Amino acid sequence: MSIMIPLREIGIVGYGAYIPRYRLAAEAISRLWRGGQDQHILPVREKSVPGPDEDTVTMAVEAAQNALRRAGLSPEVIRAVWVGSESHPYAVKPTGTLVAQALGIAPATLAADLEFACKAGSEAMQAAIALVGSGMADYALAVGMDTAQGRPGDALEYTAAAGGAAYVIGPAEGAVAVLEATYSYVTDTPDFFRRAHQRYPEHANRFTGEPAYFHHIVNAARGLMDALGLTPADFAGAVFHQPNLKFPRKVARELGFTPEQIRAGLLVGEVGNTYAGSSLLGFSALLDEAWPGDRLLLVSFGSGAGSDAMSFIVTERIEAARDRAPRTHAYVTRRAPVDYATYARWRQKFTV
Image (cartoon, rainbow, N blue to C red; front, side, top):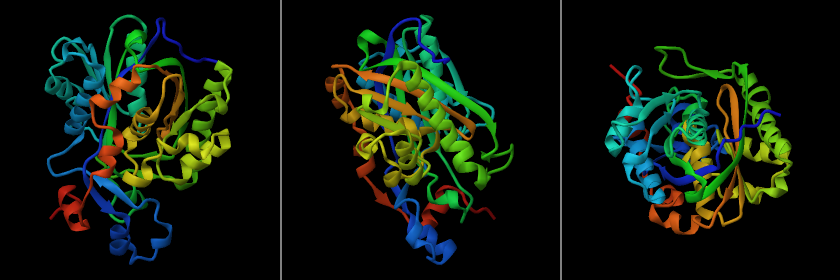
């Protein structure tokens, strides 16, 4: 089994989340586009919405500042800034350079953007793990952040939300969670896509569930656990990508994880699907409640399609580090409701 283990021991030395305070109720979307006929099957209660002055860059900076605070590091020591997102502000101009400059990391650093649908954030983590694990750098910053949108009235509009998390990867001796190994599983599966110049993504419903989400997450998780000789009972907690409430619960059952093991990281019901930030955001919430010695599992999913699975062991440094920045649920619970008209204006849903 082709698991990936760094040449030296490394881990997460700092982490941070960010979620906009604004919330749009799912029933508001239902009333406008479905006449309220689907109120009994709404996938979430509400979703986070970026403010008129927020985008992937501003939110990535907020999350990264929290990660640097927890790491206790000066920005100048970061040697790479990688930002995974489906909603980079520019088609040609990297988000990574903007984030690096705003944080005071530039100019002596690498910077780049990653795209792999909702797996872009964990892909940034994989790149950071490889760079630091090879010894080419001591610290790298990985961000998964999105201001996702769905076509007005489409099923995606109910859950397409905003937010994400940032992770500083560094040597194990300073880590709050040490990496055991990673494993990735990808295939060419046309479940979700957006062509160039197309504003909103398309989803091929018959591919979305079993051939895409479940197939890839199950194989990535099992591949990692089998190679390490682990079972679900060996993990104190787990996070799986959260497009809705049903999918992560179902895949957890299929793999043998209990509802309690996924409870702390299951945020989609409260803030919606933050796309590239989804699994990373859930994992930050899991770290907020973890204890030294806990083994944690992170499994992302990106349409197209692929999954990254990572296993971490929490260290005693977690207890001091997590209070240096706002916890994930502090962003979840602060909320300011907005109506659909305000949301549509901020997100430029309609043009004349």
